Each structure stands twice: as C-alpha cells, then as structure tokens.
Image (cartoon, rainbow, N blue to C red; front, side):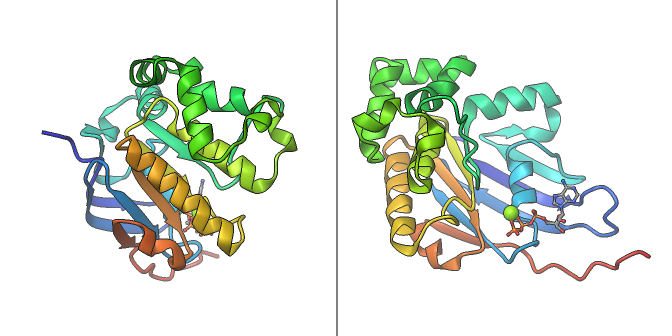
Length: 234
Ligand SMILES: Nc1ncnc2c1ncn2[C@@H]1O[C@H](COP(=O)(O)OP(=O)(O)OP(=O)(O)O)[C@@H](O)[C@H]1O
Ligand SMILES: [Mg+2]
C-alpha cells in the first residue's frame, strides 16, 4: 500500500499571541504522485500552513501526517532531517546560495542528505547524471551550469530552485508562490516544466498561491477557509 503524501485531520493552528486560530482544516488528503493547489487571499495563512506540512511548526490541535509520518510526534531535529530527506522546498525568493554555481546549488541536497544522494545514484547512475537530466528537463543550458547563482535572471533562478528541489527524488515538493516573480508566459512555462518533471519522478507537488489562474494546472484544488476578523487588542 502506498502512503498518502499528505493527511491533515482536525487541524487548528495559531501563532503565539493570536487570540483565535488562524485557520482550522477538518480534512485534507493528497495521494502520492498527485498535485495540489492551495489558494486563498494574502494573510489567510497559506505560508503558515506550509510551515506545518514541512514540520517547521506543529499544530495546536489535530494531526499532520506527511508520507505516513505524524510530524507532531517527531522531535524538532528529526523533523529537520525528515524535511531534508523527503521534501523538496521551493521558496518565493528561491533561497539559492549566491556564491555557488548552478551545478553546486542543484547538487546541494545530495551533499547534505544521504537518502537524496542514494536515490539519485540508484535511479540515474550518479548525482551528476541526475543533475544533467534535471537541467535538460528544466531548460538550463550547459553553459549556464557553471555560472554563479547571483548572476542569473529571475526565471533562471526559479528553474535552478526547482531542479534543486527535485534532486534526489524527494516524495513531495512544497512550493510557496513559486510563480509570483514571473510574467504570464513564463509562469505557465515554468509550471508545465515543474509538474511534468515531478510527474516523471512520481513526486507529489503542493503549491500555495493567491493566483487562482494557475489552479487548473493541478489535480486538486483546496481553498483556505475564510478567516474571521481578528480582534485587535489595544
Ligand atoms: N512567524 C510568525 N509569527 C507570528 N505571526 C505570523 C508569523 N508568520 C505569519 N504570521 C501571521 O499569520 C497570518 C498569516 O500569514 P501567512 O504568511 O501564513 O499568510 P499568507 O496567506 O501566506 O499571505 P501571503 O499571500 O501574503 O503570502 C498573518 O496575519 C501574519 O501576520
Ligand atoms: Mg505567504
């Protein structure tokens, strides 16, 4: 039996000092290999929800299971390791290491996490072979691969961030507003590349965005619950 990529049950989450829960989610399940779009307006808690899925935060109530593992039962250091081994993250600002080359940025997960090294080696013969495969799939030309990340265009940085997230075949990619810095045409091109490359590895993808125009690209769409107004304490 394959484990669900994500299972949320009866979740309630608030940041410290918040008088009411930021959001409550009764149930949300994503099967392995499926793609999910999570939408909702600015401030509704999309990035906060991703911090639960990635184990950076834990909910006050309910269960958040990722790949069958209940994140709230792991210690903080075990959650860090779990995240590095099983999840690929794409941040809004991409978080590339500016003085490393494209090649070095992409292979980073294989240097930090044994499981990612082994997966690339087992499935593609070597880490280099997997880097080359991802660069080809994401249209990162050979000449670009030795260039330092701080010399790239925004669109190039984004494709490098996607390649890095996919290296070592994590089971789940989690992306926070990955297309917000791109124009319409590049947005769709990038999503097509990300989703087709992930699908070729049977990697699930969860993307949060306020941009509902990209929602139709995903297998499933979840809208964040409407947020009740918070009382501001004087
Ligand atoms: N680290 C934090 N500590 C305390 N409050 C936070 C923290 N991060 C976010 N918040 C609050 O939680 C609420 C939701 O923020 P969040 O960043 O999750 O929204 P979002 O839906 O991702 O918004 P956007 O679309 O603008 O990125 C906001 O009111 C924000 O101020
Ligand atoms: Mg956000």
